[in-house]
Length: 343
Image (cartoon, rainbow, N blue to C red):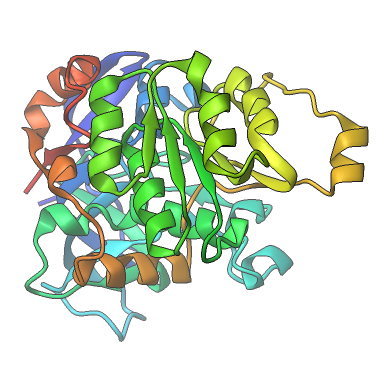
């Protein structure tokens, strides 16, 4: 068998199911037979032509789980049949940034499903060092959540979230909801969420937020009222809007932190008042993808039930119906995550 079924994004908003070659297996790689793949916000950006459009045609998909189908001749720590997930960030492994677990800054970095073909297919080849075995009894729909949870694990690390820190999350979509849950695990309080969707605000409250605001005109007053008039210790932008990034700086306290997380267009910018930032000792840090130990920690948290996942595991489509899955995302706000079932 040398062919597999794959969903190829041939142009913005258009998938084609095609028989393509199974990826060749390198001596230090693993061939993973895909079981489930979550649709990520980045996949939506790629689908709409807002991100990585120069890389089409492409097989997207990076929030995946599967089983080891074959191992390269130099792979000793993995065996066929093992359930697994994978770190999608492929760096050289030896440069300054890779050694510091900052693989996204590696000069040769690429990502499965973004910079090279990914998991909306029956098989994907992954460097063996990035493959992570998962417990045999862990449901596949939870395994496929490891990568997105790793993203919020890393964001919390970068922001150095501590006990009793007040936090605002701008956006209550899938990743915003996971940010809320991660902040709660870290001991942040109060946690305030802002989203235009009342349904998603309700889900954020169910996930552990202390307040959820759907009226933008009320947001600043609510943040001040819940933080003793100071403003929030931390604001996480999880939408990807220059307007919301600018708003984040209006919501932090003096000495507060803005976590840059949501992906915008490549030319979008936000103005920062330099004098205020210096005099108030405000800080900014970007974070976008979990990698290395973030993946292992995310797996541990999910395996031990630390995240509420019901809203992330209820919607699924077969690989053959991937076009419908993407076309209907906007109409299914109650589905925080949609997963593609491959095998």
